[in-house]
Image (cartoon, rainbow, N blue to C red; front, side):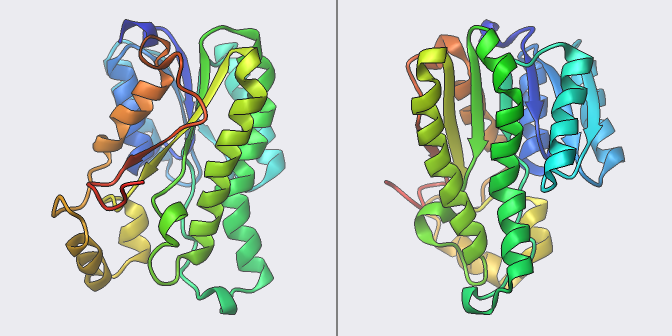
Length: 253
């Protein structure tokens, strides 16, 4: 995958979990990485240090991407540091907290939507000029198997926002195809990441694991290959508007 060498990649939510695994994977392909984080500077710097250990450039950037002003600042700071980006990975997101849909108040609805959906829209919008100005650029959004299944109990808002991400991916792919910007998404299943450590009980996690045909939870690094594939012009130059499922067989669309 030599075509990823020297590319500049911005990954949101890259201090841990899938985002960190994707950042390390890009570095192993020779890409320079802008490592975004919200509240874990030490973890983000550890990811950046790994990127540098692979001979690539890396910088950490702090922002709360649920806030439009901070998201626009993030885009400006990344461009000021790297001059451009070639690949945007919209990975930041989370449950916020579990709640039945009928019991979700406006504040929670806004918080989940702003974190998972609006953040992706705002950051992509801010970076479209640089993506359009270069060749072989792409956007990879992180959706979820929950977008198809409605999620586990209490995660319905999360599932709904991830369905938004999937649909936004297809719509934006149509808008940008003539500009040479490919837009795709990866939909992880139940992956062993901090999001479940914080919001999923061991009992529920065991129940979810029992439904997976491969008989185990996924690892964060097992999502990275799909992102690299979609980002690679050499491997996926005719792939746009697609959602790749990475779920151990849990959902087979």
